[in-house]
Length: 210
Image 1 (cartoon, rainbow, N blue to C red):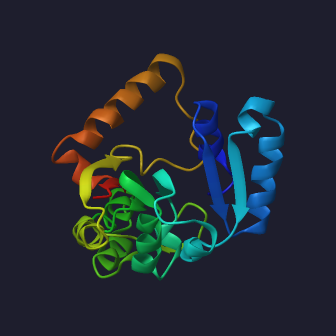
Image 2: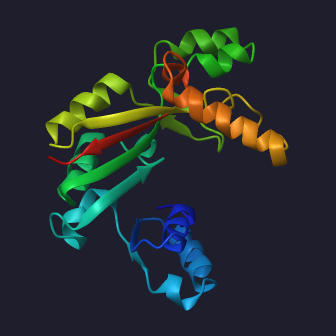
């Protein structure tokens, strides 16, 4: 769940949300942010301290219509076990949403930045250093497609994320107004369009429980 940004956004949109987070500092931040929300939103959110690999301890099978796992797989070495536990929580027809680093394009960011040695090395690894300076794992579309099929939540749709903006500097001034609208429209279209979506920095995969 991280610091609860997406959980609060969903609650504000009217959804009932359960957030699971193992990091005590992140959970404290999320709870503090939740405390600032109106009562109607606070009532729709439940925050639990726990590990994604231990979903069976906290939830019954089929407990949720949607499970979000965004920016999590890159930090675990037990991807398949984690995904199996998440799929178990889905009700029939439920959606499993994954956001992962694209393991098929790791050479692009260093290559476009002129780091030729780094780009060459990226062809032979499934890890990269993220914007936080942490070494994280990337995932390939083909492997995740097979995993989702094996846990009875086969791939329904997938999109590219950050097709044109993945190489932007972390301290770059964000666009605003009409420029931001054009940027979002560009990324949205590219993320749905071949071949652009395949070279995105991130992948958004949606599996549906059978």
